[in-house]
Length: 210
Length: 210
DNA sequence: AAGCGCTCTATAACAGCGTTACTGATCAAA
DNA sequence: TTTGATCAGTAACGCTGTTATAGAGCGCTT
Image (cartoon, rainbow over all chains, first blue to last red; front, side, top):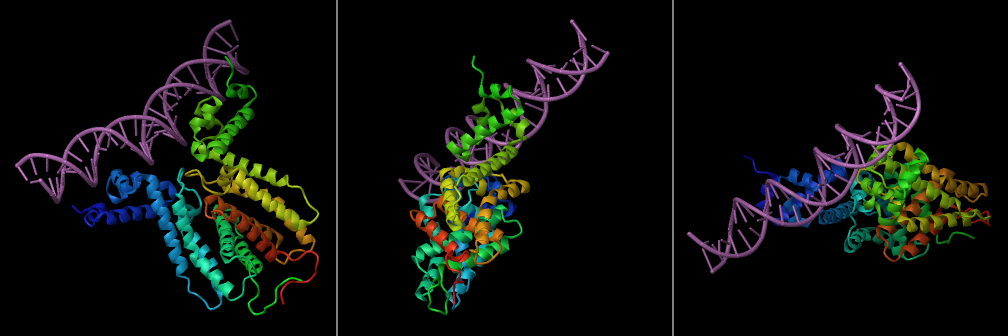
């Protein structure tokens, strides 16, 4: 008889078991949504009993925590894959579009990161802090703008957070269905507005306004 | 023996029963969070069995839908309570701050509207559309700015949605714990940035930029 | 007035969930 | 070989939403 996925992972140590379970959970989350994320279902998919999940993650909360970290790591990798451009503002814009594209592509992951798809799940403070580090990429990009003298004012870290918040806001409303068929327009408008409010034109040294 | 809350509502017709159940659910949501929103618990609080909930709302999904609508209605009333100011930009700013204040005050309601606190709950398309109508107040305020010639460009409806998205983004990140102790600063920065990007200064007729 | 029928409600049951206790299997060390 | 510990599977508990069942109350018809 062919060995189950669990049996082959078992032979390669606890780490393999752990990733095997996490992979099954990821697949389930992406394919069928958070409602399908049950311990019994994950165990059945991998080919073991729920006891193993308790040994590895000490319960569903631990599993969710691991999945939460995994979601942010995926997201970080994808943002890091956006090629850097000479023009820091253009690069920032690319990051914003990549952010939205990835959120829409893996909306269940996005909901796991910023929504609250599982009844009682609340990530630990430590997990949230490490999750926020995902946005070092964004902060670096804003810092590059600041170095180029493009920032209209404010601390780069706060400017980055502000940008993040605005983009997240549009994406979040879009995922919730509140933007209907005008999501594209609203996203572009928000990006442009934030660009106009946070930065100043690259070629001229003038400050805007009277 | 004293009559239960359900028995007195029962004497006043189905509508009274319905609001009585909805009130209990609201109270539960606000006080103990979405985890406490169980049919058995609601029924026990009111003093009836779960059967009544099935007759009135045909299950938990229907109850959540009603609660969802109720949440938006509450929110709308609170935004409508913000006094209109002669300066349309100042009024918009007040609306933004009221938005955040109310979201933080009733965060469980806010999560119900924009998060996904209950496992399988997805509001119907019709409910989402009617929910979006809550923001007619915001759209009117933006339209007032447009009438005063303060809009930098773009359709007022999209500008309003953009503003909504940005504010929602900050509040959402704040509720998720991602802004730690700098929520105030990021909120102000976002409001100012969106103001600078979407509008032009009130007193001067000049267009900004070169 | 009696009987019928309809609506409403409570109780109990069912499948599913996370969680835990228990039991047997497996394997290394003494 | 025996002992000890770790690990995994089974079964149970209490909870959830949901549904079937059975009884109670009331109005209408005959």
